[in-house]
Amino acid sequence: MKLKENLKAPNFKLPSTDGNIFELRKIKKNIILYFYPKDDTPGCTLESKDFSKLNSLINKYKTIVLGISKDNIESHLKFKKKYKLKFDLLSDEKKTVIRKYGVWGKKSFLGKEFMGIIRTTFLINSKGKIHKIWNNVRVKEHAKEVCKELKNLS
Image (cartoon, rainbow, N blue to C red; front, side):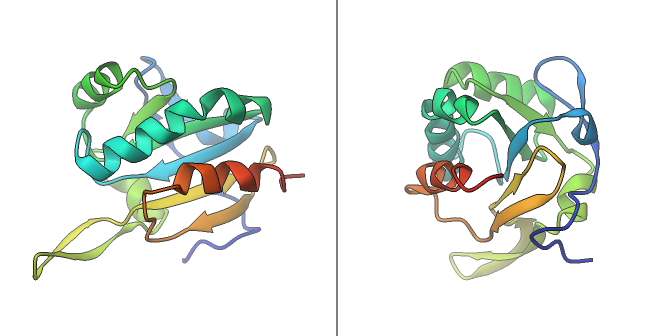
């Protein structure tokens, strides 16, 4: 099933860098859920740092940010510490949530095709519905664009 705006965001449980198991449906806030390919790579680092810089503004909109990749928790903890990220990262080593959200697919780099995470951001409202989806995200200015959209959340 392809996820669309106004649909209920699929629930999931994943290990978080806060040491707990994160469960989507237990959160009664807006959520910026961004899927990214790999910890500590140029685009992912830039995107994560941008969301981190805007974190206090995001919190004013009663919203939390969560990053998901297939890296393990140990990798996430190093990444979070290295760039002093102000939000938690979730580990999906089995790619269950990555597949559930439809962000696993064919990518190409330097003429080679391979399977990987397609950089995608979901803005989920406090009632658990998908407000907006950004597909094939271009990192530059993306976090600012997502922040602008927070004003339109009911």
